Length: 152
Image (cartoon, rainbow, N blue to C red; front, side):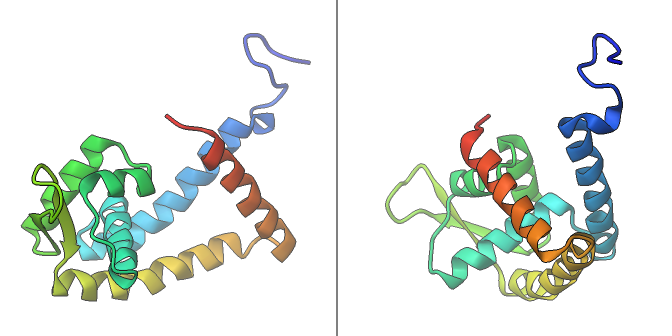
């Protein structure tokens, strides 16, 4: 029996609520692992993206980070400012667009994020390791479908 205004008999039947619970649980694990290093999950994601782009020789501007991470503009701006103050990333003039700044990891930023990536991937392995291989493949497919079809 449904309980108006809800469309579900039980909260656990709502995909949005389940996604919320799952995401919050996963994020708490990540936050706990990052706390000793003094950076937030958003800051880690930005640094990991910058390391990825360094490997493929891309000069990212702040807007590129926003696009790839799906973080909001203010979070990216504040995170970059904090990471610059910590000496983990730096901004430089964009070669082609004088209005834009490219963002790069410093040497210490690259060292730190290279140390953190295996830790975070280990958390992912434990968290998503609760699924069978086929379930994980299906989950990845579903998440890719949602993220490519839905824009803010």
